[in-house]
Image 1 (cartoon, rainbow, N blue to C red):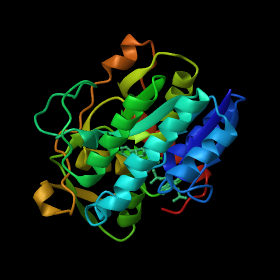
Image 2: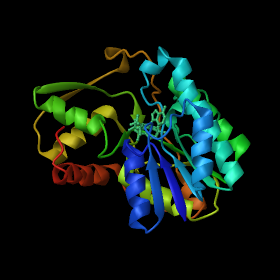
Image 3: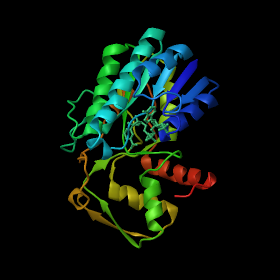
Image 4: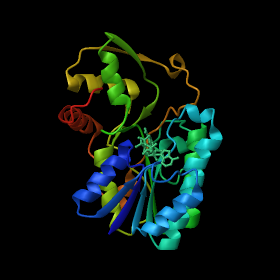
Length: 286
Ligand SMILES: NC(=O)c1ccc[n+]([C@@H]2O[C@H](COP(=O)([O-])OP(=O)(O)OC[C@H]3O[C@@H](n4cnc5c(N)ncnc54)[C@H](OP(=O)(O)O)[C@@H]3O)[C@@H](O)[C@H]2O)c1
């Protein structure tokens, strides 16, 4: 099996390359240095020349707030680039795994979103990721669309590292308590994606670590496990106005994984513990 992983310098792509390699697959990880997703022809040509059996499309324009100021660039990467990869998958007969987001949903209510729930993105990033999903569905039959949320991994900045860094200089932190979702550890997700790649159980899935929390609860657990004493004060979203609106309800229903016979990811608290160990072993600065 020949695997092409986009976004290989990013959090998820990095761990996907490692996971497929660990399983003895021939894998090539690419980033914007190999081709830019803003150039659909270059993306298409690269993929059709490589002739992969599976494309794991982790690359994206992920600067959620900046996207409000540069929607065209965000759309070119997340929708246009994804469409080009989907066309290349179709024309080479490759399966495609597209990584999407909880931000395709409006985020109201408290019920977990099922994969077929009505979408309604509240920001540019979410809208363009949804357009990417649509391009994949329309273009390549053999696809997996996997929506994830609150990502953390070794190759990049994320909430866990930001909290640990802030704790070095603050005794008290205020953290948003009215957005509820689930953290996703990229090492755990990479295992699921590699499992999916060897099946034909195509469709749209939700995949995060198990359990729900607020950002505030997430921060408290990070500090508890890291043995760092910081007072974490809960605040509403209005205390931290951001350019892009964030959903309050990012709960994703993972039942589709069970029905297709895929293993769910471990609980998020367990993932935090293993990530802290990974950070220490990698000698990473926060
Ligand atoms: N981060 C989250 O909390 C979150 C939540 C839900 C869903 N997701 C989705 O999960 C996936 C992985 O996210 P992540 O956090 O691992 O991403 P990330 O760390 O921000 O990495 C983004 C990757 O995309 C590549 N990329 C960006 N613009 C590109 C372009 N124009 N052409 C080619 N490659 C380009 C980057 O390559 P360079 O290094 O060369 O720029 C990098 O490898 C994405 O699809 C994202 O939408 C993320």
